[in-house]
Each structure stands twice: as C-alpha cells, then as structure tokens.
Length: 195
Ligand code: NAP
Image (cartoon, rainbow, N blue to C red; front, side, top):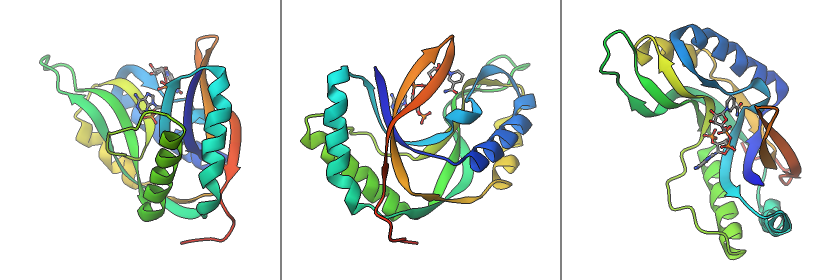
C-alpha cells in the first residue's frame, strides 16, 4: 500500500483552493489537476509499504504526537517545481508541480517535521535527506499556454490562515482511475494553542 503522512485541510479551505484552481485552468492546456478533496500538506511520503508496517508507523506517530501543540499556518504565494521552458514558441512552460506556499508558524511546522522524522527513523524507516519544502500541490505535469508569471497574482488573493490541529496517516490509491487519499487514522495535537 502507498502511504503518506500529512495535515488535512478543512472543507472550506479546500473549496477556496478549488475556486483558485478553477481560475488557473484557462492558462493550462493539459495536465493533472489535484482533486478538491485531495488538497493537503504532506509531512512525509513513505511510498509502498507492507500492511504490517502500518502498526509500526502508528507507534512512531503516537510516540511524538503529544509533544505537538496546534499552530497557525497561512497560505502564502505559490510556485513551481520542475519548470521547463518550451522550445516551441507557440507553447508555454511545462511544470512538474504547481503549488501554493505555506507560511505562518514555521518553527512549529519544522519541529513537527523533525519530531516525526526522528520517530520514523527510530523505528527503522530510512531518513529523508532532502530539505523539507512545505507546499500544497495544485496540479502536476501542467502544460501552460502562457507565461507562468501571469498566474502568480491569483496566489496572492488566497493568503488565508488555518490551524494545524492534527496529523493524518493517509493511504493513496487509484479507485476506478481516480486518485483517492483515504485517512487510515488521525492524531490530534495536544490542545493548548501556540500562535
Ligand atoms: P501519490 O504519488 O500517491 O502521492 C501522495 C502524496 O505524497 C502527495 O501529497 C505527494 O506530494 C506526496 N509524494 C508523492 N511522491 C513523493 C515523493 N517522491 N517525495 C515526496 N512526496 C511525495 O499521489 P499523487 O501524487 O496525488 O498522484 C499520483 C498520480 O495521479 C500522478 O500522476 C497525478 O498527476 C495523478 N493525479 C492525481 C490527482 C489527485 O487529486 N491527487 C488528480 C489527477 C491525477 P505533494 O504533497 O507534492 O502532492
């Protein structure tokens, strides 16, 4: 099974992100837009694992979750990973990942990332050596028909704050050709608020 750990977003914020995504769609001729119910902030992608490892991951999260208090985050700007300009002048760039940026209490978010990473490596999972680049994916493998700068003003219009109150262990699967993220378990942060 394909597994990742992240912060899920509430339905209202998911809908606001979807409304933004709708405004971007006319600038893109093809690609994969993330479905509205799938918007989230990934903390750790674990990839394909054996079902028996779920209890080990569950134990790792339980060993650190009480250290984390709810904290405030904010959507902030947006950008791309893997931007390739086209040699064909009639086409715009190809973008591997188009994302919304995340700001706010980055100290708390980074502590959460490192506590989770430490707990997983203690249980024998390979360390993730890449820098953590928090983002909310809007779409993948997008062929733009215009310069990417044209869409950047739209990101600014959605600089909303939201509270991170729990972690979710997700299973990612393809159901009838549609990518679905199913929560396996949620883990509430300790209830005292840290702004
Ligand atoms: P996935 O590959 O199972 O990824 C699940 C989550 O883990 C995503 O949040 C993803 O990153 C993260 N992740 C995946 N590989 C990673 C890696 N190597 N390192 C770090 N994080 C990683 O599912 P998916 O990416 O949503 O979709 C798989 C395929 O379905 C893609 O080809 C996609 O274009 C297509 N598709 C997906 C959707 C959708 O709504 N999810 C819609 C249409 C088509 P991010 O946090 O960066 O997203």
